[in-house]
Image: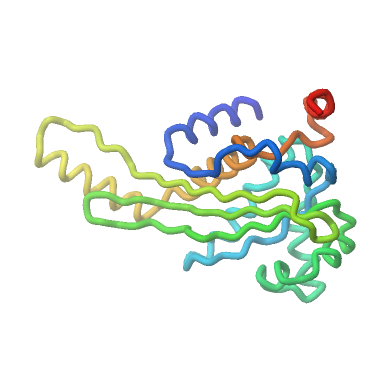
Length: 222
């Protein structure tokens, strides 16, 4: 079932507009050397005006990281403990010394995510929903291991009926519906899938069935 869900997500990625950097075989050297087993996901910093962005993005991250083979600390527990330690706002947790956060949870690495866009732009006959996320994983000592940025946009398709007036009405209704209930969560899942599984995605973690083969291949290539 999980495999089927991932396949569906990848199909949706292909149908959406995204952007990412080109592959660089050396960019993962630090990650390979650190070989983290666990990832602490701190609440994302939200630069948009939609207050739901942080919670929605945070809820979608563990699935993909776990599928890649990493232990992910329960995000709700992490949020509660961070607040207990005085980190009530995501920006405060992002500004805290990584060593302090890692030691608090005994984590090998920390994932920071910034939401740059979480918007739905309405233009009468069309509505474009956009998400733009920046990801960064650091080691327990604060050294950067991996970074990426992913943007996704979605504009509902309107199939022509052959009747110009009817088409205009359909377009207006579809745009209004997307504005009322933006397609944020599917876009968020697509962005996560693209960034973790794409050209510059994360290597398989220690709990992935492909982990041993992946690192054997690295050693053989050296």
